[in-house]
Image (tube, rainbow, N blue to C red):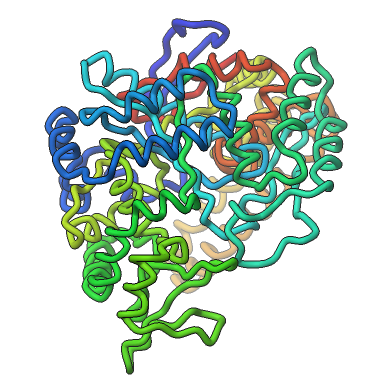
Length: 553
């Protein structure tokens, strides 16, 4: 791919797109998905279906009361402080021929990693594109607030005024384990977290505004989920994004029929999942979620969220880490009359989501794409249309100072995946000390040539010594390389300016040795560029883009 063009909108100077095949650590399943490989067609049965055709199927199978659904959405979205376009979209969703373009994410601190924003914009952009094609569609963000993996949402990362990666986290004093993040309340400690955050960030013309927004949305008494949503509601106020809170009891009641059917068919679902896992592994793919014979599709939720497990001897369903036990009839009663006490697991959640909403497309990351390879069998077992999933937009934003570093040292984005050590070697040998680098290369060549001469003489006379020489040759080469690496580090330490530029380059573009979008928080860029940054990103969303886009400021 590696396409370059002048961006249609400022301020991005250059836009490049790279195939995910060129980016390390991508799963074979994801790469085949992006490449539309026929090998994955049975796991994603709707992948080749036109959205126009699938729209009719979605609308035909949709049974939930739009009036009840949209009444709840109106009430909750008003409480989040959404803009008028969101309320207009909820009214559009009331119409029987309107579909939803859905995405979602856990309620991370200060919105979590950047890909949360990219997910939302992917849904917003496709919904807008479909409306231009005269298909009524609205974007919906499913707040994954039932999740109880608090360690994942309590922290986030920004770049400080020196370009260093800094972690911030907040754990309320009354936090307890296994509580859904939508029930974890912020306390006064959040004020200190926000103050410390802005002490570390560079002071800009936008700092006061961004700090004011965080202070207004992330405050004592809000939950991690409500604060997260109010923050995003402000960020997307001009884009019409609808937010859905799955912990809402009225919405749970609307899900009761699919809950009941799932309990009825739980054993069949687990059997199908085990068979699908075996199919994936036989095809040299991986199953994203571990499924065992005693698995059950729900968690039991009182205050804590605890997994349900089937007792293989007597068929009873046990609540893990407790003495609570149910039989099938009792669980059916809960599903029918107290559905708020049940919470779908990771594989069932998309099916419930697409029962509650007339979902035409879901946007997710590579891990969620892997979920859908497994859980398509749940859709089929429950006689539901298998929702098409698409990969969300994927970006790395390169600030001008880092773009200049890449240009100065003749590097491109993909070069960075070789690692910091390799980049330092290249910079030292090409720009800082070319003469010494030449000497190293000459010495190594001379040693190898002489050892090759010796090897040729020994092969015919003493074969055992020739084998011994080969081992020693590898050791000599290893020692030369070790000295070369120490020389690289010593040289780079002499030039603190260059060292800092390279360190900051990796910290910004590959924090934690992974794509920027998986680590950095939006606040890093909001503080530098204000809400303009959000609009700039939206201008670069492309509905049919399958690569990773690199944007240079």
